[in-house]
Image (cartoon, rainbow, N blue to C red; front, top):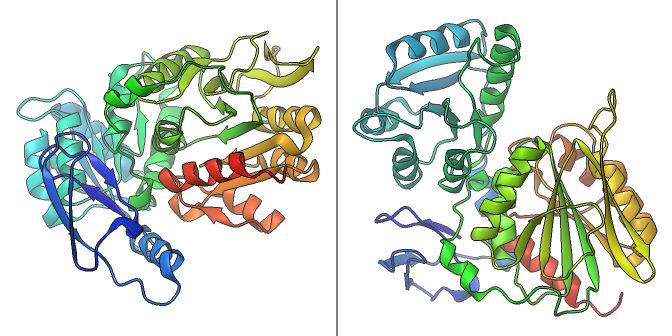
Length: 413
């Protein structure tokens, strides 16, 4: 069960097993405000039925009607440009505009937009504060839309931490892409965001969790997890990695579809908010348990066993190479090296990268954990994988972390 604190906006994840028969009180994980929640009727099927109910309530099924969009930006000119851009697509309809966050909070309950585009730097109420209030009062998919949310900026990661499902730069003639390409990208991403369910929203736990980090490498590594994280997976990673316990005898490697500088910045940010160590993958580094390594899809990443040590082999793609098989390459090398001690995780993504890699891991005797497609910002990859291999899907965040722990403790491998 997901509860947002009305005082500070922090997300609190509760297991239904810990709830009483009627009312349950607990302290907010961030501000310690006393919160109260009633236990839902479990009925036949127990916790699985409850999880299914949560998913069904959280998913957003859009009708044939146009996707309604609300634009929040303090610039009258930019609101006009964005509105004109959306008007070129029959599937989008701008239903409202606001010049700052406070005005947006007044209009959202009335207009009930399918998606909100939100600036970061605004007077009266800034974008990051506005997100927290949106997620408390009327959870709605939000796309951060600002010159501040470029690759590698702190605002990008903070907006995702507060619940944004995606981030984009405003259209500009200064960017290397032409304006037509920028418009097409923005329209496509806004459409994807509008279909996001409430369970795609993640609130990262406060940075204090980093204080109980264990010294890395103290446990013998018994399992290595390759994480396929294509488009739309930042929220899933932010919900997953901080939930992983540092004492697990496991290593995690994730390939991100982002430039190398952006991966560097995200690794530093995620490390500050996670109990396990998060590092940038470096060629030749030995794998150490209790660590998550991040790499860019513009690099070829493999794992090899050299003289009894598991080492990262990382090389930039050559000119002309396309980063469309980064996850497959990592997972296949992991399966070849570790066989049944290899695991694959697939999060939100577009396309087929990672599908063949999961197949290689399963063929080698390893296991796979797939994010439930109904909780993905983009579910192309996860839907295809579940269907092709007949796999069961897993809820993101805490539930996926628990599945990882179960695999690590399974002595049958």
